[in-house]
Image (cartoon, rainbow, N blue to C red; front, top):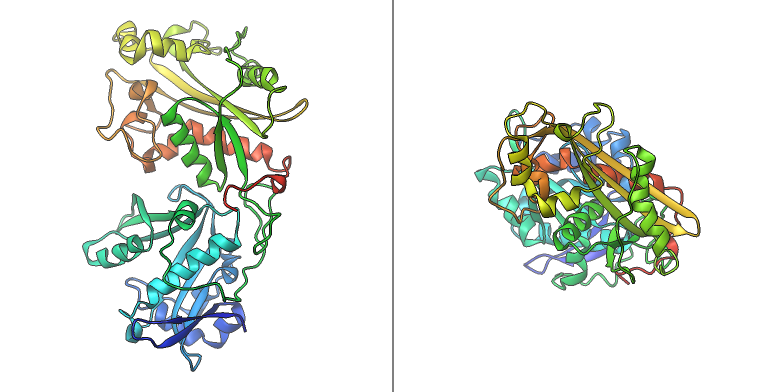
Length: 430
């Protein structure tokens, strides 16, 4: 039997063990009873053994605390959750965590979540995010404080018709940079089974030196853009390392607004750099804004297009609004292109686009340091279709739904999926 020994605050011994299907079936009454201590939860046997695809890997990542008589006194149930409208990142998601009422306030909950964090990041070497969603009510503040004490940070609120939840996360940086674990896990013999990276051709095995956190080498000098792209790629369990090209790049001139021409905006610089590139995949990106007012052809917008950065430097958002005035021709779209040099004559690309309108005034959030957003650039005058705020006014939850850069990243990763062997890369976290 694979387990790890722990002690509560009084010195009593307990064990953490895998909560696999067989053990759960043998102890289902106790497990369900402990889970149903959570407010608003009323699980049945069917809920516990739910086998929908989304829960398919939960038996690999769930654990129980037992006493010396093998009685279950605590459980944590988790599974690999992919991003969706409410959950912006791929993560190992803590679905349920509960300690038996008779054993609470003895430190067992902290020991269990600390073990879970340690074991997950140590075992799944490509994993970057662990998340949990909990009720954001005053009566639940003690639970929020519990997760905060154990390294979790709040990201955003999720509003439902009958409640408001808080999404929280802890990332690999916490695991690597904080040596605050209260348990010596060096003697544990618990093993987590191999797990496939959900978006890349990447496998994992416990302590394997051939399984790494995937790394992309990204070229940009914009510090805020670095933060944003690092956050987005981390959301999909990919690490960015920022590099500077050895030669100064100038943006190529293109002849039309066709998609193949857009692609050249990132492909040409990569071709120029290819003989200097030693770390791969090497990635560059470019952003374009198109505004109806400046284009006569309805089906082929070209302006500002490839000159968007120059327009920003010379005219800015205020200048755009002055030129457009009160015109009704305010339709617009943002597009992002991303390209990667992988090997000789081997390139991969991604693209993301959103449509919207130009606002009548500059509108920007007062919090310009909000995680995962970019309240700069022409975002202060761009209102996406379906929204009533500019991109620069949105919080992270709102912004992620309309983020054309995120859409580009997802498309880019999809195109890389079956093309790159990341297992040969050097991990930053060895």
